[in-house]
Length: 430
Image 1: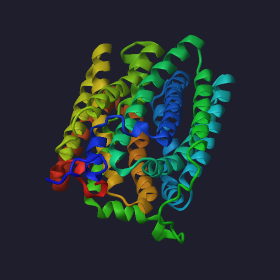
Image 2: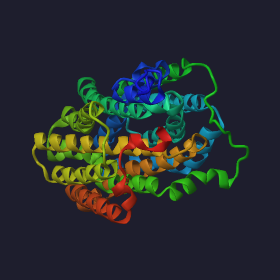
Image 3: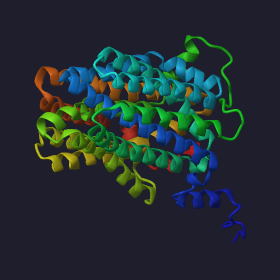
C-alpha cells in the first residue's frame, strides 16, 4: 500500500477534506470580507425593494405601477449587460464592482430624499430605480467573476452555497425589517437611508480585500461586437448551461408572485405593512432553511433532475399561494417557493461557473444576469400587467401553471440536463 495515499498533503485527500468541511469557504479572509459586505448590501436592497412596492401601491393603488418597477430597472440591466460583461473581463473586477456600488449608494439616498418630500413624485422614484438598475447591470458580472478569484477551486461549490444562503438570509430579514420600520415610522425614508449605508459598507469591504489585480487571467486585447457577443455564443454552444439558464428565466418570468405581494397583503389577506414584510421575507426564510440543510448533506447525485423537480415544486407552490385566502397558508407556500428556488440557484450558479473558463466569466455572467434580470424584473412587469387586466389571482395562478409547462418543456428537450449527475465530479472543478 502507498503510504502517501491518505496523507493530508495529497491533493485528492485535501480535496475530500474540504468537501466535507461545511465552513471551508468561510475560513478564507477575502471571501469573508466579500460575503459580509455583499450581504449587508443585499439586506439594504431588499429593504429598499419592499419599501418601494408598498410606497407606490399606497400612492397609486395600481398593479401596473408595481409592474413598472421591474420595467424601469430591466431597461439598463438588459441594455448594458454585454458591455458590463466585457468590462468585467477586461478590467479589474474589484474596482468595477466598487464603482457600480457607488451608483447604488446614490440611488438609495435619492429615494430617501423623495420619501422625505412626501414621496408623491412617482417619476422621481422610477428615475432612482433606473439608476439602481444601472448599478446592478455592472455589479452582477463583476461580482460573479470576482468570487472564483477569492477561493480555491475545491471550495468554490461551498462558497456558492454560503453566498446563496447569506443572500437568502439577508432577503429574509430585509423585507420583514422594512415592513416594521414603515409601520413604526409611518414612511419609507429610514429604510432607504439604511439601504444607502449598506452599500457604503460593501464599498469599504471591497476596498479592504487583498491588494492585487483582480482582472481576468487572459485579458481581452480588443473591443468589438464579436468580443461583446462571445458570452452569448458560449452559452448557446454549451447546451447544458443554456438549458439551465432558460429553465430559470421562463419559470420565474411566469411564476413570480413577489411583485403582487403588496396587493395580497393589503386587499386580499388584509395584513398591513407588517404582514407584507412577513410575506416578502417568507421565500428567503425557506431558502435559508434549505441552504442550511443542503450545506450539511452530501453533494446531489443527480443535480439535473433535482433542478427540474425544484422548479416544478416552485410552480406548484405558486399556484396554491395564488388561490390562498389564509395568511399562514400563504406564508407556507411562499416558504416553499424559496426552498425550491434555493436548490435551483445553487445548481445553476455552480454550473455557470464550473463550465466557464476564467477569461469568459464576466461575459457569461453578464448573459446569466440578463436571463435572471429578464425573469425577475420582466416577471414583475408581466405579473403587474396581467393583474391589471385580469386580476391578481389569475396573474399568480396562471404564472404557476406557466412555470410547470416550462419545466416539462425543458425536461423533454434537454436529455443532457436530465442525465447530469454530481456537480463536484465535473472535471472543471477537480
